[in-house]
Image (cartoon, rainbow, N blue to C red; front, top):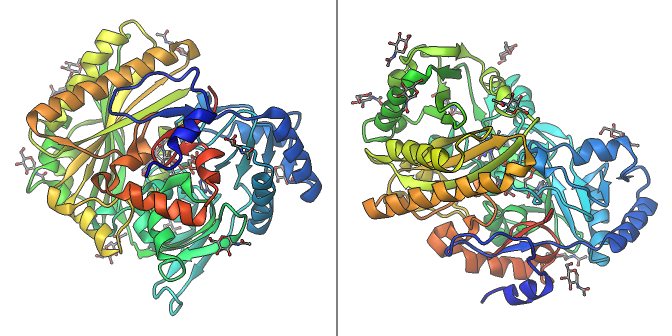
Length: 517
Ligand SMILES: Cc1cc2nc3c(=O)[nH]c(=O)nc-3n(C[C@H](O)[C@H](O)[C@H](O)COP(=O)(O)OP(=O)(O)OC[C@H]3O[C@@H](n4cnc5c(N)ncnc54)[C@H](O)[C@@H]3O)c2cc1C
Ligand SMILES: *[C@@H]1O[C@H](CO)[C@@H](O)[C@H](O)[C@H]1NC(C)=O
Ligand SMILES: *[C@@H]1O[C@H](CO)[C@@H](O)[C@H](O)[C@H]1NC(C)=O
Ligand SMILES: *[C@@H]1O[C@H](CO)[C@@H](O)[C@H](O)[C@H]1NC(C)=O
Ligand SMILES: *[C@@H]1O[C@H](CO)[C@@H](O)[C@H](O)[C@H]1NC(C)=O
Ligand SMILES: *[C@@H]1O[C@H](CO)[C@@H](O)[C@H](O)[C@H]1NC(C)=O
Ligand SMILES: *[C@@H]1O[C@H](CO)[C@@H](O)[C@H](O)[C@H]1NC(C)=O
Ligand SMILES: *[C@@H]1O[C@H](CO)[C@@H](O)[C@H](O)[C@H]1NC(C)=O
Ligand SMILES: *[C@@H]1O[C@H](CO)[C@@H](O)[C@H](O)[C@H]1NC(C)=O
Ligand SMILES: *[C@@H]1O[C@H](CO)[C@@H](O)[C@H](O)[C@H]1NC(C)=O
Ligand SMILES: CC(=O)N[C@H]1CO[C@H](CO)[C@@H](O)[C@@H]1O
């Protein structure tokens, strides 16, 4: 069953949408009615005074520009900043009753324009949902956990938990927000604990009918499964209850390497992802990247390291830690300090783009990922003031086993297919007129890697939602295609009128819906 896809496409003309590769999904433009939105905003203001902001106010400007990617600064009709989860629920029922378009924003790091932000519709921000409570066992979930309102940034959670000697398997960059969990979420602890989503014990969420409910393995196992990867398709999460994990000191930090060492880095990561390499040690994690500046033909590379424990020279990381650095340091320190060292990873003064492709871990993997980035940049971006690169993120077999052991998720990857890497190709630039050229580079690079890896039998048929670009189809690749029908059935049950399919942008079930077009 194709959930009202043809209806949707009939309803929205996709005027300015770019044609994307043939096997990518339909990209649809979300049209909002400005007058209808204004009426809803006024009704909302009447019901919840001081929680609704219009374009002439400081709070409106601050909230509509609280996005990492400047291209995502759009013009919502108003900003709804509820003071509590109950108020958020009340507001959503008003928006649904009036059939307006809306979207939610938490950490604002979503780099697909018009998913976490929108023109003319209502921007719902979780800014005031700040609860943080540690709940010890015994409790109904049988484990210690943190209740945390969806406004959080990962650094806040780690700093809070550190006083108890605890952490959680969450984001790797300090300023990223809670919605990472809804796309799965890659953590420094994923080899032992799976996706961040595998550590959620309960979601407090506002559903399409405006009810505020707790979703867990007992209350609604189908929706609980769907939320583990299902993104913005089922409701607005107001609180996450996350399993916590003991942590002491870690060996870690962020470093950059000299450009004449880039090949040594590529070789060290090749060894790291192959059998017997450092990725087979569950305590070891890296968040590496290589980059390239087409204007000057200069390359660069660097990584963040985390090794759980106070070993000052873990063998699993030695091929990488022995590369001479040009900045940064790796030392035994608190986990929150390592995460704090990533603050430079997310400057908010430019435009950003993410696309990703997965490739099996094999001897040619790292070099081909680097080569295609560079070849396409030299061809398409010669003389252009932009930076491009890739974060090549190892996914281990033990990570996928941990995900299964924790009860599974909609992402549903099979450990027996072996380890792979997610190549997150990114670009950043300043000049908005370069947007189409950058997109051309992204799509050409992904296409070149896909063709090459398919020929070599190394293509891994899955896309990571959290690193996906517009018109990629992450949800369609879940369970290698098997999860989508089940997700559609869950949507039909909990959102029978398709509010989160029609009125809320994002990676939807069978298509992509964005504002700002
Ligand atoms: C610098 C950087 C580092 C990153 N590092 C990692 C990493 O280590 N691991 C990883 O897995 N990913 C990582 N990501 C990707 C990251 O997971 C996504 O960008 C994610 O969307 C960020 O969540 P957010 O709350 O900051 O985003 P937002 O932009 O607030 O939200 C993202 C999406 O979720 C929706 N949404 C927002 N709030 C809610 C809510 N309360 N309920 C339901 N839907 C909601 C939005 O509408 C939007 O579609 C990184 C991204 C960046 C830019
Ligand atoms: C505006 O936003 C700030 C910061 O989120 C908040 O403290 C303040 O209460 C908001 N103003 C109103 C009138 O709600
Ligand atoms: C509700 O809004 C959606 C999205 O704008 C639109 O497709 C749909 O036709 C509207 N439904 C009604 C009953 O007006
Ligand atoms: C490290 O964490 C401990 C608690 O585990 C805390 O007491 C200490 O202040 C932290 N140190 C730094 C530098 O953050
Ligand atoms: C770190 O290692 C300790 C000791 O082996 C273990 O108890 C703890 O669960 C690990 N923490 C994480 C976050 O994996
Ligand atoms: C890179 O350059 C530095 C300084 O010039 C030098 O010490 C180092 O050996 C070089 N590395 C390689 C791999 O050539
Ligand atoms: C990176 O650039 C240096 C020059 O600064 C060059 O010597 C080296 O070959 C380049 N490395 C790769 C992998 O392209
Ligand atoms: C280090 O590199 C060597 C040489 O490539 C490789 O044999 C070894 O497995 C690597 N070690 C780790 C822990 O990755
Ligand atoms: C690239 O653009 C940035 C921002 O406008 C500017 O600071 C920088 O000087 C530019 N670089 C070149 C080489 O023009
Ligand atoms: C809203 O939907 C949920 C899930 O389908 C259901 O349990 C609840 O009773 C509904 N609430 C109302 C007020 O209709
Ligand atoms: C960049 C990107 O695609 N981020 C995704 C990460 O997870 C959130 C929550 O599910 C998604 O909505 C984002 O699309």
